[in-house]
Image 1 (spheres, rainbow, N blue to C red):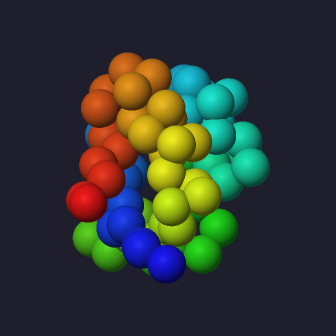
Image 2 (cartoon, helix red, strand yellow):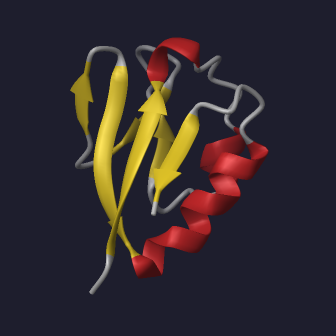
Image 3 (tube, rainbow, N blue to C red):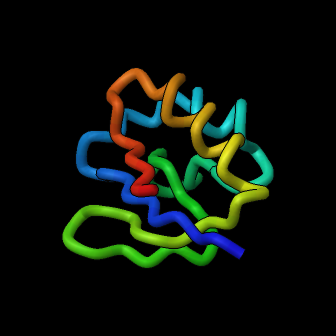
Length: 76
């Protein structure tokens, strides 16, 4: 099964929640920081980094499209 790398620039996230509304199975807004959070992703230098499956790709692509700050990048 193909995997895709996702990088989310948490430093530029404003916590508006658009991404979590369209991909709520995977993306949450952290209650403490008010910023994007994805279970299983690791934080590296102000970025969340992780891999997703083909089944998750559509949701993450929708989240990337609705992000007002364009902080979600999917590497195919």
